[in-house]
Length: 180
Image (tube, helix red, strand yellow):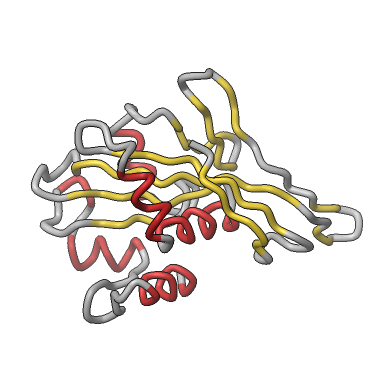
C-alpha cells in the first residue's frame, strides 16, 4: 500500500489531505460495507483474494472484459471476449524456496459508477499477484497512460490490462506496459 501512496503523492495528492489508505476492516467499521453505498469514491487495491470489497464489486458487476476472480485459492484473470485465461509466470522454486526472474504478472484497472451509490465511483487496481497490482498503480501515476486509458471509456466505465515484467524477484519491477 505504501507504493500506492507514494505514486499518488507524485501526482500532487497527499495522504491525510486528499486520500486515505485504510484496510478493508477499518473502511467497513467507519463507512459501512460497500453494499450500503458509502458517499465517497473508492479506490480498491489488490485482487479479490485479499480484498473483499474488490470481490463484492466484481461479483456484483460482471460486465468487464477482464474478469478477476478467485479459484482454488488463487486470483485468476480471464479475457471474456477471447474466452482465455491470462497468466503470468510464478518462477518460484519450491525446492530452494527462491524466485528466479525475469517473470511476468498482469493487473487490471477497472473503474465504474458504483453499483451501490450511483453518485460515486469505484476504481479497482488489482493484479494476479502483488507485482501486477503495483504495475497497474504505476500506470495510473503516468499521465500519458492515464489519458490513453480514459479514451477507452465506454458509458462512464473503463478498464485496462497491464503487463508487469520483473527481474530476480517480483518486487523488482523493470517494465510496465499497457496491453489493452
